[in-house]
Image (cartoon, rainbow, N blue to C red; front, side, top):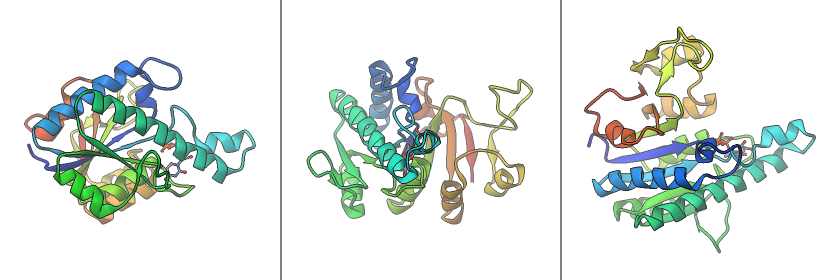
Length: 235
Ligand code: UDP
């Protein structure tokens, strides 16, 4: 395996599967199976999940809600998703811990870096919930921040598309995929990989990002093995 410790970022929407809202249990157990395979091969796995399938602060603001209130609701949505994934992993016999950026001691540990690293060393999957704990940020930024803190080798951003394209492949059929691209090229070409706060954190801390299609079974393992070209690497 090319990477020893990874941070996997999943969007909230990826948990919907074919549903219009909420969580698809089949999708959850598929993800759990994929994650279990790499844990069994000795990879240390930390996970950040978004909340977009349940609630987004910015949309709530458009409806007249105060932004910070909406953002905290979005952060709580990520905790719901994190708990769902935790259950799916444990049902697959994978040991897990959930740590949240907003304290909720009845259901999760608070985020403590040293403790998170210790869990990873013991082979437990650590899920980081509640984003960064601050409004006006995203779970992509939480993923970058946590990955840097735990000294992950790479962020794996699981998406519906199989990498970074010259244009949105769902809109432009002539778009072509990059196998590899530099941080500077992403800025120059104005490509949308992550929000700029998250992206800049990765660049400034030399943390590579791999964007790949998480919904194709076996891809996660292949990305980590790095024996074949899957997704796009930003470095
Ligand atoms: N959020 C926040 N601070 C954070 C992370 C998330 O305020 O550090 C809120 C924000 O309102 C966001 C929502 O939580 O819209 C859900 O997260 P995100 O949109 O990143 O989820 P994804 O798009 O990955 O599903």
